[in-house]
Image 1 (cartoon, one colour):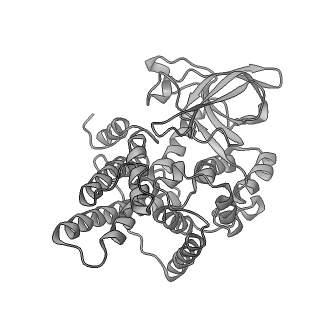
Image 2: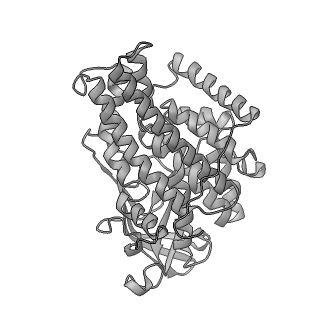
Image 3: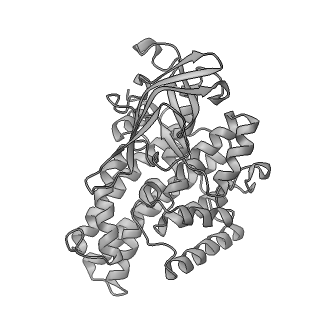
Amino acid sequence: MAAGSFRFPRIDFSPELKALQQEVRDFLASERASGGYTPVADGWAFGVDLEFSRKLGQRGWLGMTWPKKYGGHERSSMERYVVTEELLAAGAPVSAHWVADRQSGPMLLKNGTEQQKQEILPRIAAGECFFAIGMSEPDSGSDLASLRTTATKVDGGWKINGRKIWSSGAHFCHYMIATVRTGGTRDEKNRHEGLSQFLIDLKGPGIQIRGIKNMAGDEHFNETVFDDAFVSDDCLLGKEGEGWHQVTSELGLERSGPERFLSSAITLTEAMRRIGDNPDSREAETIGKNVARLKAMRRMSLGVSALLQGGESPVVEAALVKDLGTKFESTLLNDVRQLIPTEAIGQSTDDYARTLSEGLLRVPSSTIRGGTNEVLRGIVARQLGLR
């Protein structure tokens, strides 16, 4: 890629993609009408509903692009994008399977053993096996290369010691893919060397999961502690020392998806329901401005998906989408809040008030998930030749 250039290919939905889009919309409308789910802001990060995840698996909407021999459906990345976009826009509770479907499954497809693929991937695709991310650590901030958790070689495997933090959903997940140090040092010259990734059974010995309460009193985030936790040799993903390359590939998937700008879209939808068909000039301006921003973000995200489908690694474009998407989410919620004030949290149960309060509580964490805005802007600045 030439310095200063960004690639966002234009994508137009085919009749087949539009038909799939309508199929998902009809399913979601039916589920919501029957009480199958309640819309939630930031549903991909906080909306845990194990039964809803199983329903999606039964419809073939998890593991969509994976080989059929591993429980997948061999559909295109754009078909997966369509399903993902509709689920997010409707505020569906998809957090339980999100990490496993988005990045852990593809990581196992690329680097797992044949036995792991046969045993784990079909369960993910069925909505019955869930993964946590083991990247962030206490005292490391967003500097992943400074991580301290270690894996030491022993007979037949490795012993892992250290701590991971912000491991979302680890308390109900079956596995974690953890990035740890197997060699090298943490000095400036060797920051990205000696890192490896391991598949870890969270029910194994030597592992303790501690809930971290947020300001709403929920324990969604966790600290995961490893104390001489043993994993067998086949739990090393890929080759020793390949961890940094694997992580950057994962972050491309994590940063570029529609979840980076659609987490609060359900609040905009509910605000529009509240306003009705005859908005005043201020309401029309606010809604129009945010819809325009939303369409621009969608255009960029679709472009990144096209690059990923073509086998490219659009790290910089993904970073830009994530940074702009985070800013958009915060702006959207504040705009809507000024437009339609609502009761204090807990004093109203209508969908607009509830999703607005959920979004306002959770949007600060979006500046951290997938890399802080400062880190992402550094990536973009290097592409522009500014650092």
